[in-house]
Length: 246
Image 1 (spheres, rainbow, N blue to C red):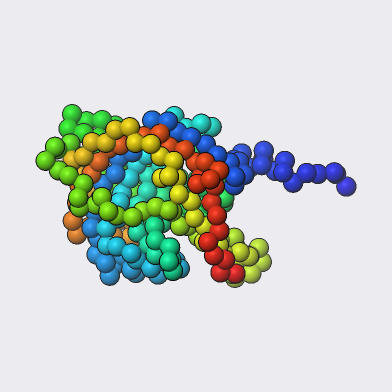
Image 2 (cartoon, helix red, strand yellow):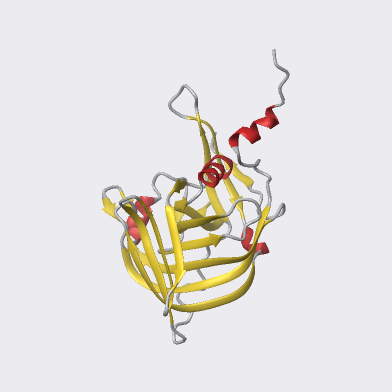
């Protein structure tokens, strides 16, 4: 039999192990803050072990072009949740534009990543972004910079730490081999360089839905475009297991 070191399998997977760290100086992020329908958002969370902590949420696109290692775009809808005494955010809808980062994020840390085409660009008024795949629109967002807008409507929204479910299915059964709730808190190492605030716009596609019902936005609170130094460090970026349900 071939003498084999299982750690060499990482080369086959083409992404790194769970304790991999990385950094993205000058990370650019477009975020639009919304108020949703609380009852609908609670139904959205029914498949997860979390409770809804707030009826506000964020729709965002982040440009990791300066990332150490693989570069990519990330697009997400992040919901505020509670698990026991833990309060933070969970990535509910998430998309990236590289197959390896999609697979790595899902398998390593439980982020619900899917592949999509993601765009973000400056406009004469601010920034715009779009997430789509072929004819399917996930969402379009934009900010129009406006000095009369302030962050009071969303500044207190708690979306960190992140809490995700990392579930490994049984190979030959109906359930899961493991079912862990994991946490990471990269905001502790984030250094803001620039923030510009304004009025936000959001258009959600039919795939952003609760069952057959499209996710509703009751109010767009505002938007911001930020530039900052991001780091996933051993202390805060490598996840820890909060609970194991199996």
